[in-house]
Image (cartoon, rainbow, N blue to C red; front, side, top):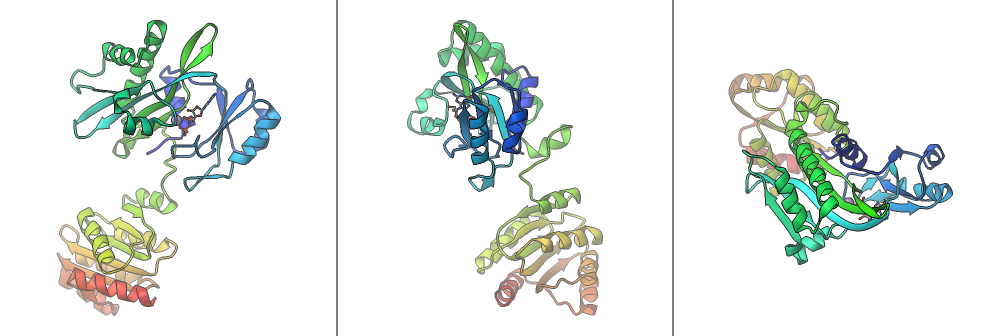
Length: 372
Ligand code: GDP
Ligand code: MN
């Protein structure tokens, strides 16, 4: 689950990482209520990167200019995401831009710290064309991240004296955020040296935090997951695994592997899956009823394919849900396994045929979708 910059910064600040003073607005007029020192920076709050290059980050010297620029950014679309909120913050006078992130290196099976003295909006180019400018240090999961790791990375990035100590403190906080929040990624880009008196200080000008979806239950008080569609939220509340796709054949199966292969079969025969719904092992009639309601609510659905291989799940429980509320769109059912005969009998009474062969069933639903 991705957090917005302003949400991530709240967490960063709670861990002592310095950030700019700022507030979130949703209408340009709200600028007038904001008590900040000018110039300010206006930042689109969307869950995609590269906002600067897309025109979603703008500086403003006066309230009038801020209102005008806020009106330009609010409502604009960045990589398909409409901007609904702006972070307005006191602009930093940036001297140098660094990169610092903690992330999971799956191949190495441990966290990796990634740092660079060439941070900023072109970090991907830096990684591609001059990888020697990127410092990577793996963290032993048994011993953890120590201040000497932080100082070692800081020195490699060219920090000295007070800046090195500030860097080490920020790196240590970021490592704690990563482990304590179960983050897949905790990133500061740019980590900037900004003017402050004669000496500069380090500031997290941007913040990115992605929490592992499997660990969300361990954290109270996280913001709502804004990446989920309305139907994905509805499915989660019923403990159903559901993913929205962009085709027109609604798909229900039991077991993630079976549903994945069902999507492949539909694509293979020329159809386009509208969604992925796994009712799970041991699904009851009630689970199946919810599942059908959810997949069919998706806009643009023209058919329904139900592919059940009864194991712990009993075919008669599934059949009861199907027979009780046959959909208005063409439906193809494939049903085999535990209590298959009972299931077929229930469907037969509702004049619904159940296939045995999944490929024949997939072909049939693709054919019916073409006609629907
Ligand atoms: P991103 O493009 O989505 O990664 O958004 P960032 O928050 O990283 O901002 C992009 C770029 O805008 C930064 O690398 C800075 O160069 C610039 N920027 C952001 N905030 C400020 C600020 O407060 N002052 C100045 N001078 N530049 C800023
Ligand atoms: Mn950034």
